[in-house]
Length: 413
Image (tube, rainbow, N blue to C red; front, side, top):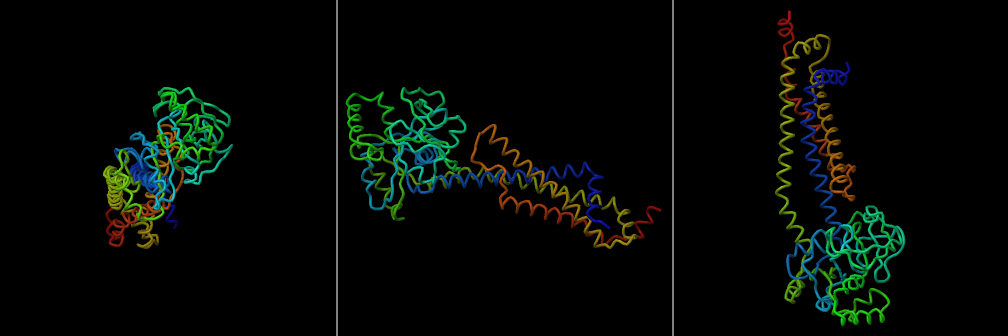
């Protein structure tokens, strides 16, 4: 006697009940998977974008806003700071590396970032084509920028003031000299250039004395790294990324930085933990709703199997007379529960990954989310759900041992 075939035949015969129960399981498990996958990948993405950045110095304001603007590039900066004001911290014995950031302009929604080649090195970014920027108004663009805007080596474009799509366009034109490989980090959606490019673009609003000073700087220096030395101390930057030599820096530096006029220290780890705590309430609420759906689905399975056993007593009694043992019948019913839960899990997988694909491709237009990736967590959730499906079917199936064949058969005679 083929238990799998018998279980399948019964579920097929009661197709409506099978579909409803599978759909309930699929919705509950699908919501949990959707939340788990999104939460895990977003957390991994945020963590990956933080690599190598221990602290950020920005203008006085919200520390969280500084982190979101200077590290994740998803918020507006709190303002600019004088390069000479952070010179002390660039030479601090507890700091291993500092990376200047110049923000404020964009192109077609992608941010133009003035910095040094140390910045892409934080993310182990490599060139897919071309070269790194070497002089003012040259840019190396992230993989997502190149893909979305169809930019190629040698193309030129004018950035716009601000971070909105309708910002005022500048007269200066950038030239694409390099395209980066995809890193699945924030680098993919940035347009990287030298700090001198940012200063030069904004000279159109600067007084004549400052323009003359800049001209002298360009005549005396050949590389963008040299331009950020003492000759440029009167210049402004948006933020300074810090990498520590010692954990003691996390204790000593914030007070020193915050005591300086117009400077604000922001710790990425602290601010992101605070942010995740704020949004965690909503995530827990959605998780609770998903677990409730699964509970309702399993409860529905229990009721269906319990009721079905009452209606199938005659059929089960016949199977017993044909030689089927109570254990085999019990296993048949449990197999039905396992099949039902498996179908629900397959539908949940299809629902989860298809939803992620549609949302990220056509609505949010996110390229870094791995929508078709199956994680270990997802596998464990599916296996646990299938196990629970079998367990729910097992409880009413235990009635098989109390089934009196002669009494059941007499009722049908």
